[in-house]
Length: 366
Image (cartoon, rainbow, N blue to C red; front, side, top):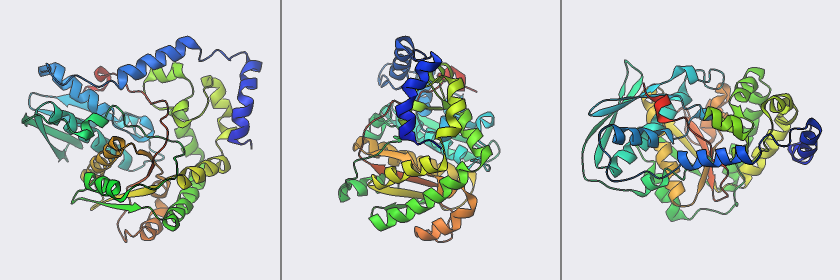
């Protein structure tokens, strides 16, 4: 199998031979940049009310992360509440068979919405609706407060790159821990090199298992957007440049995917990325049910927003929790005992990458 380095070296020649070097030309790049600026713009803080305010709150919520950037949510708006419902048509049954990641994603969106509501003079209180498997956020008048977490929403991204390897100051680690605190969620921060190497072993083992699972690879490929044209057209999924990979035509990306996305190449990438990280955060809910998965998502999103405010990048390395057979050993290794770990996130200072896109608000309204 070819290495990623060889892929980057040979791709210009491959495109030239195929006569497709212009597949992501100036027009496509301009359209992508325009979509980025529209998607990730800071919104107005004054003059919004009624439907315009609800639309802005939903827009902020959609800037949350979701597994494979599936944006697995729908929003139902009423006079005094916004309800976030699961969009099961966008679930990932292979990597997420019990919809754990799906409900974590709803929690991330709920936290963004609550932070945005606070900035607009509304108090948002989240409650899980068991009957509808939804998160209802009731809204009431309050004093407007623009927090640093809210201001970080347009800048947060899952940065799948190598970081600078430098440690995070104790005071900053404390702020991350405080931001993510909840009686319903336990957070373990690992920063020592032996602990990170231990996590790395689980990540490599889990990634190897996933990459050798044809169904997992097929599901992942369906959510990759190999070029700017498809990223803009669909507004979802994993844009190749957001992971530091070159753009190719969709048909060529599909043909080459198996050559370059191999266990060996991906494991080498994760070794570099984990060893360049300042630490790893592991989140575990007090119970394993949808309501607690939502709470895990809320805690993680506060962690990610606080990290963004501090200039710290984050990225998921969830393989040890996605491969079910690995969870008990991983939990014991990181000090969680019998608890089920829900999320594994590496963090550190590093570059930004081209951001992912989002579907328009009208597409996610129930």
